[in-house]
Length: 106
Image 1 (spheres, rainbow, N blue to C red):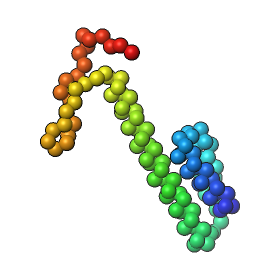
Image 2 (image 1 turned 180 degrees about the horizontal axis):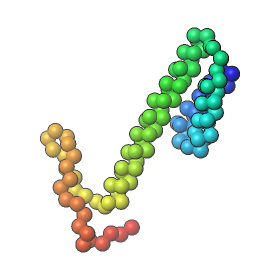
Image 3 (image 1 turned 120 degrees about the horizontal axis):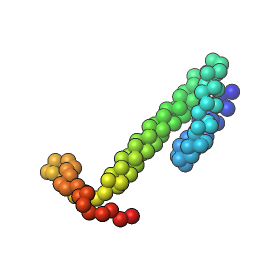
């Protein structure tokens, strides 16, 4: 059973790296079901499973940050061009925003 869970954790990693959200949605309940029914395991197997689960958690967090960043960028693009500068401390500052009098072209 632990080999099946390992295989699912590896499939989850592959789906995250590939950005395959459909596969992730199908794998998540399977991983949870197997994890809930695991018998007592030896230390080596437990560590191997923990390592894979931790690796997947890091990848999923990074993917979430990437999605949020992409969403923010799309909102920024949709709002139109702005003039931005950076101050001496590297902080971003918006100087002017798009005038509503200028027609937008797409």
